[in-house]
Image (cartoon, rainbow, N blue to C red; front, side):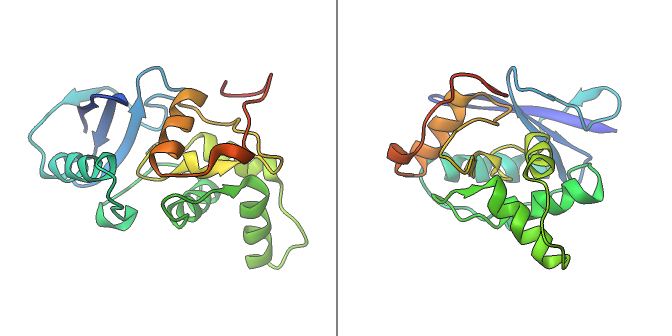
Length: 180
């Protein structure tokens, strides 16, 4: 059984949170690509799970400008071994910092003893992250400074990066691409 609740921040808007009863399995923004894509079956409304209280507290602190750690919450995103690995890398990106898809690909390739890894493969995993904000996929940008690639939309990605105090001068919104 998968349960759901919602959380609303006055500036950012509403997010849906999903849980298996023990761990967070999803966090999506309204209209987000792949909304609920990793959840099998219907999500049943439930607002009183302890894990939801933990997630809402985490979000409150995050939106208040604190820096809660991803590791504070029990997370169980559903995905392939490769996606899980990329999502763990996302969780290591510090608050207020950004990495490129290429950075992540090079790091994974190096760990595997390979010469290179596809940035596009990493981008696909980043784009399918089912626990937005908490697993900070918004902190990944293109090598040239492009802000493309956010399933929640570029307006939200920019909002989150600005909220974290990222200097946005080096970044730009592409004229065409994915997740615009």
